[in-house]
Amino acid sequence: MTKIFNINTIVRESVSKLKPYSSARDEYVSDGSEMLFLDANENPFENGVNRYPDPYQRSLKSLLAEQKGVSEANMLLGNGSDEVLDLIFRAFCEPNQDNIITLPPTYGMYKVLSGINAVENREVLLTSDFEPNVLEILRTVDENTKLLLICSPNNPTGNAFSREKVEELLEHFNGLVVIDEAYIDFSEQESWLSELKKYPNLIVTQTLSKAYGMAGIRLGICYASEEIITILNKIKPPYNVNQLTQQQALKRVMNQDVVEKEVVQILKERDELIEAMKQVEFVQEIYPTDANFVLAKVDDADKRYQELLEQHVVVRNRSTQPLCENTLRFTVGTPTENKKLIAILKQLG
Ligand SMILES: *Cc1c(COP(=O)(O)O)cnc(C)c1O
Figure (cartoon, helix red, strand yellow):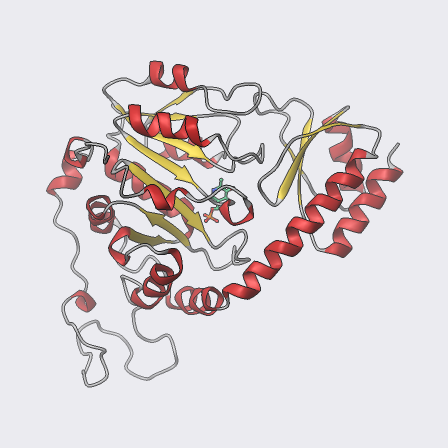
């Protein structure tokens, strides 16, 4: 049964009234081949990038639609998922009035975005096994709670959350549930994309920055109901995904088998890294991971972090995060990098 949800009760009034900027390239339907484009004050001499990019990234969306089994009308692309998340805040959260719920320890950008947008960030800690505290979350909701940000698999803990818990939240929270799936391609758990039709309050974000190996081009993807996508399209900068990014992304997504092979290799490396880390004396606990990184509890994170730096290895010290005292987060590298890391870890007594 589909959940009953009315997006018009959630959207900011200023956004709902907004008449969006209409770009020149919105106003024709053609493949463009027989047209003279004298509308946008571009330099007419071809150099590959002299024209404005497609504001709706149609080629890339149609390829993603085919691969993900989601219609193009349910997709919005952005300059990284960071832009996508910012658009969600700006569309639905009234500054100095609304609030969001985040579940620390989690991705740091949610808090930054709440600060930038002057939206109160209500933090409900994960339980000691790094799962959402469903009762406490629902108790924290009030009539101004617009977003619940769920990162699964979660950064920095690495685990994918229990589906039952996330489902309960989708059922019982009447704002938007944003599931950040930056690491989904490394996970055994299925994506929440398949549940979009069932939950009209669900937004799923993905990115080309991690498994797809394209952090440098900045491409984030938002999947949601057509109503939500229409609202986000209204407020997005018209040319938010540049042409070089669209081209590079298209090539990479077309070569899906290469991405899959790299993911398999990274997962194999991850498991070897975990086995090796178990032999390191100062590593006290290695947390289960569905991602391309490993969170480990060590004897003294600040000390070990410094020692690794001295050996030219940069890891992430997550000790300041709640429930993460004395933890370091290790990204899985190439086989050569991982061998080096393991050798160095074993050396540090
Ligand atoms: C890395 C990461 C992202 C990626 O953001 P982009 O802006 O797409 O590079 C998003 N969410 C989480 C939780 C991440 O760890």
